[in-house]
Amino acid sequence: MDLVNKKVIHDRFGEGNVVNYDDSYVNINFKSGTKKFVFPDAFGQYVKLIDKRMATLIGKKVQKRQEEREKEELELEAERALEQRRRYILRHEKRMRARKIHPKLQSVFWCEAREVEEVFTEWKIFIGRSKTGQKKGQPRKLPRMSPNSACLLTKREPDMKEKNRQILGMFMADATFNGRQREDGYIPSHPKYRLRLSAEESEKMLFWNYYINKGFPNNMTWNSGRQRYFDNIWMAQILRDIISLRADSEGLEDAQNFFEYFCRINRIDPETLPEPKGALKRN
Image (cartoon, rainbow, N blue to C red; front, side):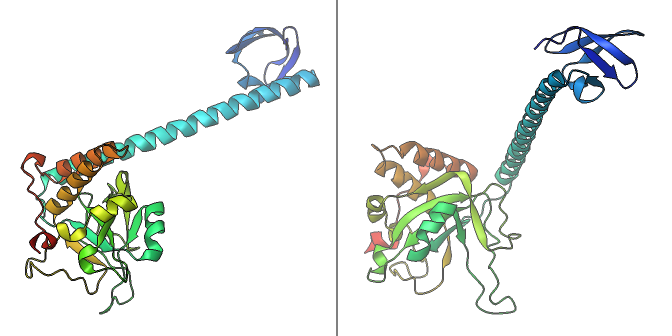
C-alpha cells in the first residue's frame, strides 16, 4: 500500500497530496503548506482519500488500530481493578491483624450428599435458613464469620456412625466477606486458599479427632443443625495433619500455603500448636 502522492480532502485545508508517512504520522501538502497528522487515525476523522480502493484499505487499518486500543484499554481497566482489589485486601488484612481475634471464628458444616459436588464446583456454602422468629425462612447470617474464618466441610452417611464423620475439605472465606452484612446466606471462598480431600484422605481425616463439646467432652453427637462454630486452633490442627497426609503427594504445596496463611491471619504460632484432643481421642 503506497499513499505517496495520493489526493486527499481535509475538512478545513481542502485538497492536498500525501508527501510521506510512517507507522505514526503522515505529512500532507496543502495550498496553505504541509501539515502533519497522526497515522492512520486522521483518515478516520479529518482526512478523506479520493481513491476509493485506497480509502477502503486505510479504513480497515483505522478500524484495526481502534480495536487494538480498545483491547489495551480493557486490559488496563482489568489491571486497575485487580490492583484496587489487591490494595483493598491488604488494607483489610491489616485491619484484621490489628483487631482482637475471637477464639472461635471458624465454622463447620454438615454437607448433604446431594450438595457436595455443587459446593466444590462453585466453592461456596449455604449457611441455612432461620427456623423460628420473625426471620423464619430467610437466609441466616453468621456475624462472627470474617476473612479470618475458614469453612470446614464434613459429611456423615445415613448408615455411618457419628464418630466416623469425615472431613471433605475446607476453604477460607473470601477476603471481602462480612458475615453481618451478607444477605444471600452464602459464604464464598477465597480464590486461592481452598482444599478438597480425596476419598482416601477423608477416610483418614475424622472430624471428632478435633472437635469436642466442652460441656460433654466424651460425647460425639450432632443431632440437628447445619453449622457450628469451630475453634481456630482445631482448624490449624486439621490443616497441619493434611500436610502430613500429603507429604508425598502433589497437593502438599496447596496445603502448606493454606496452613501458613491461616496461622498468619489468625495469629497462631505453628511451633506451639498442640496435638488434637477431640472427643474421639478420649474414647
